Length: 239
Image (cartoon, rainbow, N blue to C red; front, side):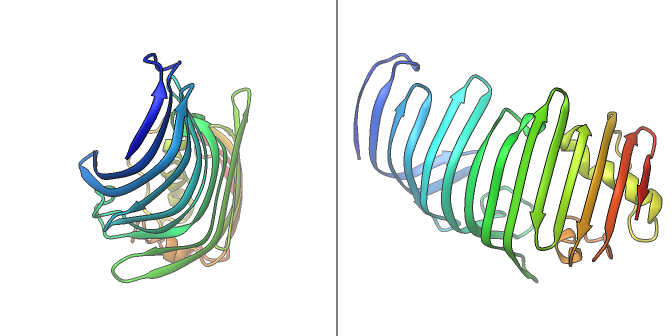
């Protein structure tokens, strides 16, 4: 590889990278064959990345990543041809993702994430299922302490507004839906913080996708839910 640059302080470094990293260890996995062509300056890396690993095949990935304290700002486009999540140590079950992505977001964690994430021509594959994902668009923004998330896809369209914890939303909605549909969804047993939100959710053929995360969930295809969720109270809904 080839490296040129100047500066020793992180804020003053201006360095060009071009070459192949044969092996990179990160969180328990040895990533192989990373090809990098880019520049690092002012806490920002901009350039191109291709990965030709047995379990991760990433092509035509380009954009920029800026790190400012705990805040990560990311603008990246690329083609994920294969990501075998179990082999990468990300999931316990066998699952392979693929798709063309366009990301433009910033934040330090899921609860202050704002921006856009779009995926087209994607797929999710397990040992027994192959599920196409033709397009998914996620948009989130904040005004004061009010967060808005919109999601558009073939199998789910949703809008959620209010003051809530994103990390707790799956269990919050499980609590809500388990109260209305106990025959289909078991109630959440975990302790949740206060959630105050309104929602409007329309589903298509969503059951196969939900079963990727919880095989006990059934039904909910072609449904429309709207209402409010206020925890520790249950809230109300129109179904």
